[in-house]
Image 1 (spheres, rainbow, N blue to C red):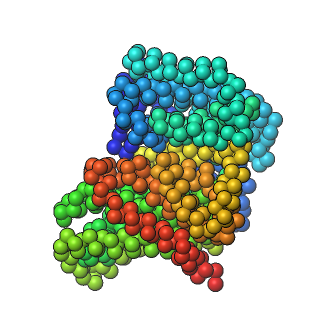
Image 2: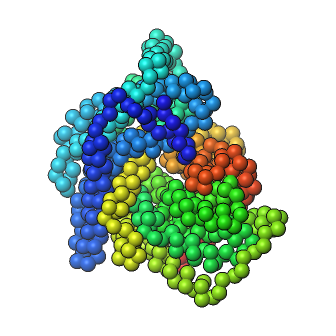
Image 3: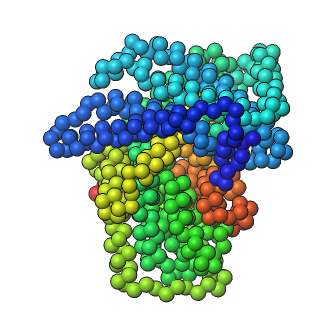
Length: 624
């Protein structure tokens, strides 16, 4: 059976009867790392040549069309092989052991069917693209489809490996369930077609997706399944699935995702996190609830470097856990503050959520970067005031303030790391370089600090970091691609019109729309691990927000914050489980400790939503 890990994800079933040799996985890792490193070198070289000798590598965009699919589809397949795709296991966990095993096998059957069908469709698409030529490189555009075909093949083989690991009774029971569903769909085809007719399509698509997710299907593959079911039911050619997934992954700006993830991993493993913690300790450690205050400040500082909330939680939590234990703080209190702080930091650049939202909507990423600084600070103040109140109620005695020399020393040690996010924000805002180019230089800057200055990294460690970053990037980009195809399906099912009807029913009321958006994104963000919520709902909700008089930048910040709260919302948010795992605390006890911090987060996001000045203050300052 598949076991549930501490972070709420499933690990693959052990002891498979059929399993590819380890060299196969090593080769896959190498291909993804080479694609990531090659594109990184190309991007840095292009910017350097343009800046120094005014020469531009015209084929940089074309090369990205080849490397991005490798990272997304092969990296995503590797993430599935390693059980690193996001899943929702709350419903499955309520079943008896045999039922959990059957659900795991049903999911693997579903993944096998989806990937085989998508793979066959992509081969057909490959044939149709043979005549297209990438303008600069002069090679066939069909090569863009090869990583998708390979990724589907790896996913299918992985499903077979997992299926053969189940005992015969479980395997046959799951096969019977899948066969029964397919038979019922075939026999009731006329009713099935009616269910996916235009007036019922949206509800039917969402029902298929929700069912798949509740069974424990990885979110990206559940999105593919729902899209495929709609295509089959609507007589739309199946090549629409691979075509839309590849198209959703073809935006050059998406390269900033793996680059920022790699930069964050380098900074996390390169001796940077400890310097941030030391600086935060010297800054606020003397306040009531000192070490908990340090968690909030450190997350605020380090988010501008890693961009990944999982990296933030792991970096800060692993450093602070023992210190919190020494000072007598409970593990659940530490996990609650860690979760709330990470939710607060979603709008601190270079947040992956900002990059994703900027890539799927016309919002300026540079303006988003500036606009998010003050809202995060406002929520941080809410959290720090709450920590102070709770510490005072406990009768906690403040720590002694550090000397001015110690504060200056810790600040000096943090200057170079803090310079990186500052340069990134200013560079993007003032058009010095694109987000992708800035993210590439962020990697180079991080390597310079970690290797040359702090001497905290060797070649072997760097290879491990690049591999992990490639796989994490693949998982994120795979979900982005699948959500792109799913979003196209929702458009075909007329979702936009139905949402407009809801806005009209609400009387075009700005307040109701904001409150409804916050609630919707919190719930969907918790269920879909955040990013898919933005990818699916962002392009749909943003025009509606503008239609009721809400500024798009302001609404984008509100969306990201609401999604961030959802990610860390107990008891379903995946980020909440990561915090519990890092701090080694129980989910139930941490949920109780999280309650007041959750209220503080809500008050914070409502303040941001209804006081737009907090969003616009910094961008207006730089616009002068």
